[in-house]
Image (cartoon, helix red, strand yellow):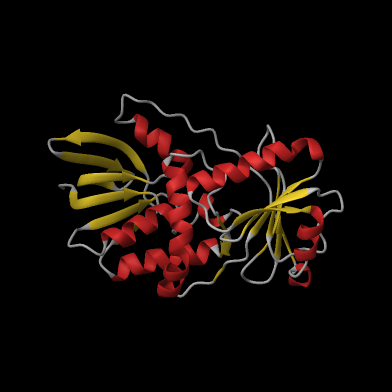
Length: 268
């Protein structure tokens, strides 16, 4: 039996893979999404903080910085088209002592360099006027008004549905085991057979390094970081209105507190 042929094979059915498939489905291309799990949004995309970042944290000049800012600007219209919940609730980065104020200022300057709109630094009292339950130890706060929240699985499923309605094929429960160059295209050997594609898009999330290393001399290693989230009852949903971050430290961003679009409170 010969291999099945596509113009583009997207490996990974998370939010990135489904968004790419939706865009490709706008064109006269045969596109498939290959996802090892039983459905889309079964990996990292289903279990994250659901935050649409303003873009102040990313390294200036990187693709991440550009896409953070551009993606945030696109979200209201995208949410309208996909009919998914989205709220521009804003974010606060909290500085708890005077000695860390220069780091907060540096984060503010980075945001300006990245082109983030509506950034400001507030005093502790100004921040508590916005969020009364904020710690009394907060001495300064970076406010990013363009930060927002979504429902990660509703967003991913909506992207996938839009792609599928417009002709993209989803191959679920199928694992890519090998990728090899084949003339002007690629052959993907999967758990269900062979697929040929003119182009392959690597959207495999924490497994993207493994896929890359099958074909590229530039090897990648991804070290996944696992956190934990507590989804509190809706009786706690009004505790804060903004997404609250602590000022990032040497070991990462630490704990965040954020409302969800469904009225819960997420702590993690």
